[in-house]
Image (cartoon, rainbow, N blue to C red; front, side, top):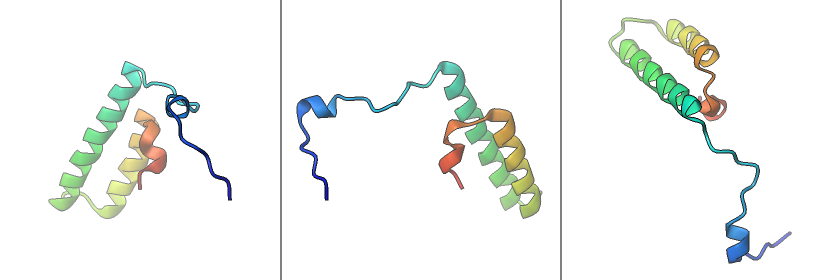
Length: 72
């Protein structure tokens, strides 16, 4: 087992993380809002589960959200 001592210098290190650009943040927000709308349409039974899944795939392609990799 490897143990790492956490020091002030260690805490201030950035590990391969880059800040989001305004455009990337906007795409994340737009994707999130589109998905929320889809969920409301599904809850109102205006679209089927299959349609929701197909549109979600299209939204991920259109918006290219960074966080989609960890989203269900």
